[in-house]
Length: 282
Image 1 (cartoon, one colour):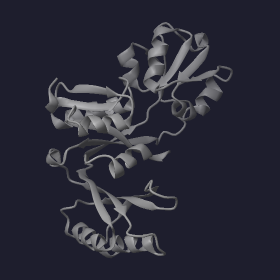
Image 2: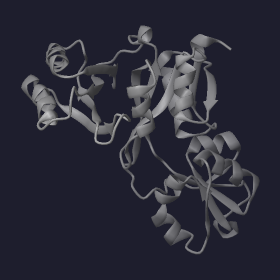
Image 3: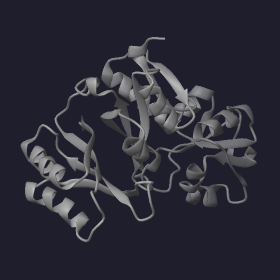
Image 4: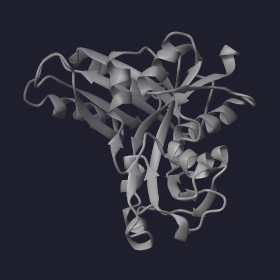
């Protein structure tokens, strides 16, 4: 296996994370990526931290569900890896089935619980009396469907292609605007591998002490600098009840003067300002 071409992702093959990994590989100019399947985002970070893979791909935020807390906690408390780039994937759920199946032959529908939840309207109107089965991933549901004409899965097109299932009904999700942002993570030495015209910066901010006005103090520094925040999320520090830190995403690069000014002011007031990455989004 070539370390330089190795990309760890949340498996199995055919997941949206797999799709994101392939897109990142194309952006990196890696024609034949060595894809390493992982069972959790923790394992993806471990592969990068331990030198098993040069890159990792993790879920960052979903437009319906919000930030992925497992990813945030890894950045805050477990890893020195940074975000190198972001890729937004449209969540395009399809009803997939065995090549010989029809809607009339389907006796149950399997998918990840989120996949089932995000296609309730279709299931209610098109398969109203068909029981559902929760499985470990949308890709697993495609594998099951490809091997059993009585089972349909809810997955993306990649999973159907990987497992040899047909797309029985395309784009069945309730919300056509559903998207997931994935992060390419790696070592700081690779932070300039990808460039773009627009940048985003992700931060983890740790307070010296919890006190009234702490959040307002943080926000005021960005306001004074004229910086737009695209995400703000509080998370427990896991030290004691009521002790929180903040994740912030902002438009701009750490090389921008206004961003540098805001960060310098925050470092004077906070216990730690951890830059999780400053990366291209276009």
